[in-house]
Image (tube, rainbow, N blue to C red):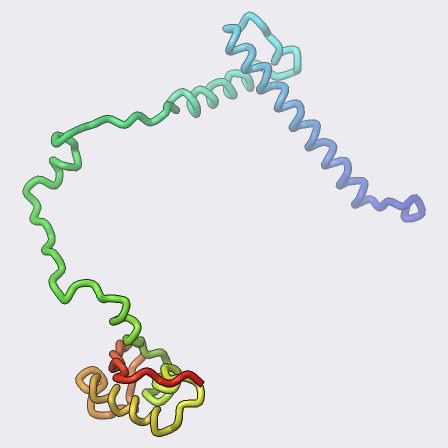
Length: 178
């Protein structure tokens, strides 16, 4: 069979595709004819001529009616204070408002760092300083950062916990541009 250029698998695949396309075309014609029958209140009997049994036509019409009969566009109404949600919540205590310092400003967030796994004060300080900062500048930032966050970090500055928030002190002078 390979001398003809086709194999049994290829022929079978083409036959299955042709059968599927034929069944799809027949189904489309039946659905269109059923819609025409419904529109003309049964005066035109196209589906019967296409070979669709009466039982199948009845089932298809019933399914379409069940699916599409209840579909209607949503309409908004002003239910006022007597709505079901409002009456369901009557008498329930409302949660307290959040108390605290309020939202952080952009300047606050610029000096706040979240510790990630593998971070140390030295690594974080080195990332926050300009490239080429000396070890003395990094050490000074580490010391001031530890002093500012001693209550969060604890007695050992080498033990940082991932997810911890650290506040870096605002530099008193801006670093010089290279």
